[in-house]
Image (cartoon, rainbow, N blue to C red):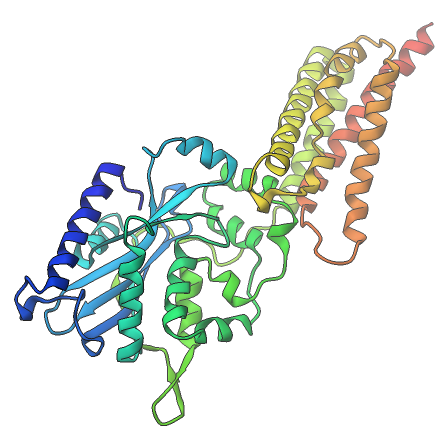
Length: 417
């Protein structure tokens, strides 16, 4: 949940003052709270919040709850705050160097927000030893200091869920990571992104178009736990050592604090191949039909496609070369949507009148067709292959139809002469 900078500052200042008073012993012993409670009195829970309706809430959220069983005081620590008022926030966002912050708040206040907006709230009480609970508390308080509160955000590798996961794993001595890395993930980054964004189809398509081969690498469960709901599910089967040398579940009990009242995301990622293939075929048919019967409409349709292809190509090139969005690097969709496509707009308008194409236009359209062929051939290479078949199926008929219309115009012009 994003927080304005002034509100965040007040919360951090108030919490730090509370911690200082607790550490100095200025509060009565019965109200000492989590700041200086012995580890044996600290109850550790993973709190998971279901996806929300806003696009930045679609991936869900989670937090670590520490509860002092003596005083009843409970605070949640989360890593999901960003500051719109930060200098250069939008520029940092565009470059892929976003800064997020850690936050802490009384559990009741934090959790009631999610309940009020209809998002699910689940508490998983974890079996931490007294020493592990104290270590976790000390780390979270250290992390909450002004000099440590910010971190460099990454959508998949360093987000609000991975920070929670890593803090738990640190206190557990690496047990969590060791067990989750040994399990294969159920989906890739691309599939999880498409699944969770599918209720906002336009944004899902933009994200799928912009993701490169990084998003298609095989994952293990540790990597896939960049999603709070995946971490919630996977942690159920994690075991920890007991005092007698045996093993027992990390999750002692699980409580659904508040049920979801929103439309849940689908369990599987949508298959975009057929919808985009049909869209590309329909556009190609429209180009060919209008070229024959409504040449101005053909020229407008061709211009629309070429301008969009050029703009998309420029955007993909910028993401690869000028930003740290590594999930968008080396995007094979650059072979389908070329920044040079805009140079063919004039040729489309000439071809509606049967004018002969320039040598440069002929060369550009030939290169584009070769690029589409190269994009298909990339799928024959070993290793991680970008799963961009839906965009191949969309772009191929469009480029073939444009090439046919442009060459047909030149052929008809030659026959007339």
